Image 1 (cartoon, rainbow, N blue to C red):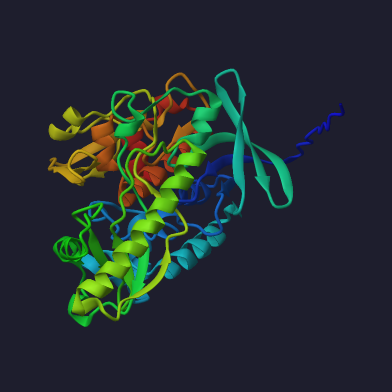
Image 2: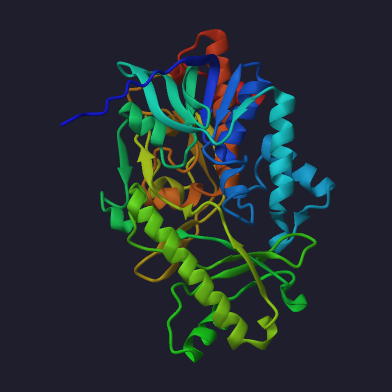
Length: 409
């Protein structure tokens, strides 16, 4: 018997002040903030465009932007100036213009961007994160950094480093919120140009066909100045977001639901007889997976009490929106405004790493509020500003005077 052996040679391709993994709203916020604060910054993403759920997940509207500042308001201002902001609820945008804006801003800030690049291993010394190993079309590379940002949504970088995490509700992966595959449609009827909750219409189409819709609270979400938009409809429950087999199966089920809904809507409602199916989103919408255990865990009680914190970095006004298997819809609870403390972004017992986005430290219920993209971007930006201060002054990340630094940024 013969064996084929291979030794992987991993050259060091660079050393950076900040390495950001994941170029969704959180990662884009973190990378721009770091670079604008003077840090040599690398941004790595496994897909072929910046923006994550904003651009590749077809995620509109841009929730919870009104109470924010900085990069998020800058992006919206630029989109508005180009006539590409508005649409559904006056808080939606054109995906391609968002991609281009992010490209421009990364270039102008001096961020080194590596697309089509997968972060496959986290480099550590004890409980200090030192860098990442990537795989890309031109090979395997190692990058070292003074601060590593996990903005992957799934907490891949932190988990690979050994950071503790939670998933689901009380450890039940099956209790994770539903996955959704957004899909793009064209030739939206003029009467629905402002969008609508389309549940009653779709339910009637399914009932006419003797079927039951997989989700009863869907939306038709037009882009600004366009007769195209997305449908938020497909819902896939009971799929493990950390299993490659399960994610592939969930994506296939999402496409099946998409085709079924499109065909039933066209055949079952005369207003939609000319609707056109364009494509499903390149990226599956995963609402919930790992939540990295941090120095503080945000809870539903914190949200319902409207708590603020000495190290608060992100104001949140979005409700707790759990896409529940039990009700086959979204289970919503209003919350007063509250803050996310910086401690939720610092993995417990680890150095050299921050997390931002939906994978920060919070409970199943709390995450259902802060996970939306406006909050993710603000978390990433302020984490970048605070990390830059820590690196510039030699201050341990847990001792950074958060409010003072953010007020003076």
